[in-house]
Length: 287
Image (cartoon, rainbow, N blue to C red; front, top):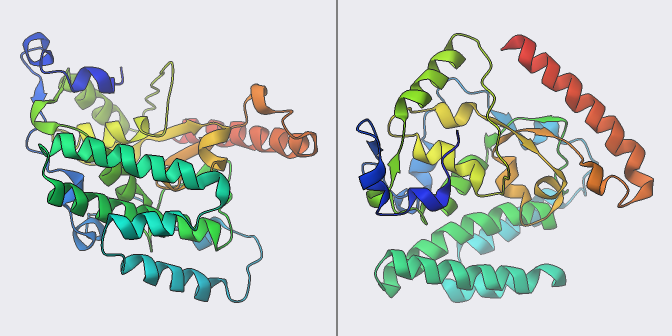
């Protein structure tokens, strides 16, 4: 059963945990990792997929130049003020959302760092510069389109580690535990034997997909990179969600609820759902 985030952060959990619970205090905060360190994370046998490998839309001849220039500007941003300035250049429907996200994230970082404004500002700037780098490719470049079976993009930009840094900086690892580690050991053993392991949850948001990688990294290194998630419409179409989804292995589906949102796309959505079912069958047979 997948651990729930609200339970993992409660101090009282230590008293309720089983004797075999694993402390997560040994896991460093994701925000403490430098860009060079994050790029140096070992592959552990994963298949690396680049954006170019799955993106087929026609490109503006100057796209690479424009995106490169945007990434250069972002890399030079000195502080929170620079982040908000670039955020103001986002499409109008995303400006206020991004600004609110920066504000709320900064508030949580200040709580985590006991009011240390300087450290919170540095962490915020580092994490959101990576996010803006990812967004620049979606806004200025050719928007990424997810295939039925998407494999995490780790190069040239590591979307997987970007999401881990964003979520990991909000987790109090020193006060968190992983209950029933023996169950995760069994999962790892079954995967190694070529079996299928299916986990069911009643709800999944963008952040949930980072919890398994982050919370099992100490006791079961690499397990989080093997997970494939079933992804619905919003997490693969919404601009602010896309970069987080690009760093995960996904089986993409269109829900019945949103099938008729745009009648002109219904046929394409149904076709992709059929392809996703075929991909799922192939993966389950493969193990």
